[in-house]
Image 1 (cartoon, rainbow, N blue to C red):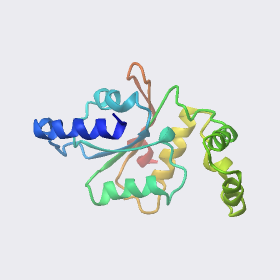
Image 2: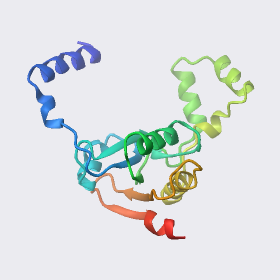
Image 3: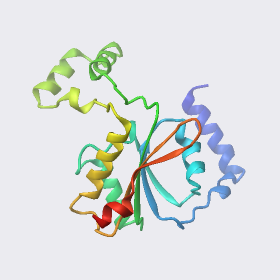
Length: 188
């Protein structure tokens, strides 16, 4: 059975048995979290932060990195604030992240191995797409979290009363370490 069919079969049972009822959302905490897509955080992060279904809008990407003030991640943060009533932002990176020191040349090499034509890579380069920059991760976790938090905090469309916090989490223990205290940053 294919992965798709396995998922659809499970979902049919899930709905028929009304297992969804345990996930009825509240909106008590009203926070937005930008974090990594690492599977180790899927259950650990909510437990470590004591957030329940509906408490947080969780935005995930590779590395939990915000690189562009007008990119998709920042747009999602602003929508969470203005339309979904979030009133605090948490940027949470994690130790042992796959984006630490990632080599963009290796990623492009893997693309070619998986069937992307060399011509496509060249066309992107000639069109002004800097794949090496676009596929770059980070070297220092704390610096990455701080830079991402700064992009959010300094955004011209962020309300001035929204604190932006930066934290790191250990993907095995769930231990949180503060990098940026959003309340303190607002007082500066």
